[in-house]
Amino acid sequence: MGTTRYIPKYLTTRQNLTRLVVWSAVYAWIFITIYQPFNSRQWLTEMNELEYFLSGTLVVLIAMTIIAVSRIGMCYYCKKHALSYVQYGFWVAVEILMMSLVYAIFPIVITPDGADKFLSYWGSAALYTFFILLIPYAIVILAQILLHYREQLDAIEARRLGLVEDELRPTPDMLNFYDDKNELKLSLRPETLFYIEAADNYVMICYVSGGKMQRYMLRSTLREIEEKMHDMGLLRTHRSYIVNFLRVKLLKRTGEGLMMEFDAEGVPPIPVSKTYSEAVMAQLAATQTPDDETLYQHFK
View 1: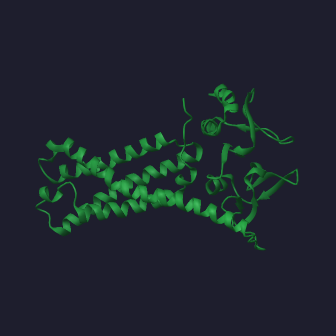
View 2 (view 1 turned 45 degrees about the horizontal axis):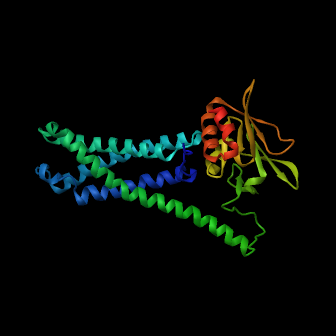
View 3 (view 1 turned 135 degrees about the horizontal axis):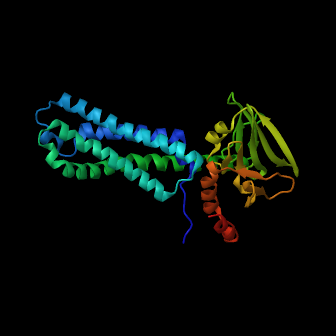
């Protein structure tokens, strides 16, 4: 069996999901009120243009509320779980069915004999809704992917040209840590970081520099770091820990539960709590190599 493929984390950030909802709403509103699909003017003959415009706007608002609630749920789900392409497709299918249900109910409310044609309305609405969402979804997702790779290419070009500034500045392919005032305090190459530990109103960043373990105290929270850097290969394994999966050597079960060990001496093992175990196993499945397969199968 092939390894499950998961969608990139940067596609499920709060900012990108907000863009998708906004652009889908604008496109759907224009499509419904101007194009007037479903042959709607044929069975809404008693409505004037203003009434049709207001009714269409209301339907779009209700439908977009469904998408907004759905995407908020996706955002929270992806904080603790990896989302596969199959799961994402199923999620979108449910959104389409729920939105088309709203569109199908609308003529039933407006016309007395609409109930007799409910299934027909729902089938047509589902088809139209699919095409309504296809264009804005495709445009927004492609734009997010292009923007992500553009940032990476800009960072590579800057390093090639030797562009260096005295002031610490964020680099897209590095781990950039900000404090609670949103000021950049530390930038690390991904392979140098081991884990981040919660410490009251601070976090302890544990990394290697000059062959030695270093620790940096940052005034922030794990939740803030998780939200800002969840597409950088970091994974929440416990309410008190975020781990860099690049440095994990093995995952083993002990009397205290699952523990992660790193590929360097002197780094303490990190616990994996039950809350985050599913996301850890999904990440392990997504990144495993042939050498890791036995380890993964042992914990499935």
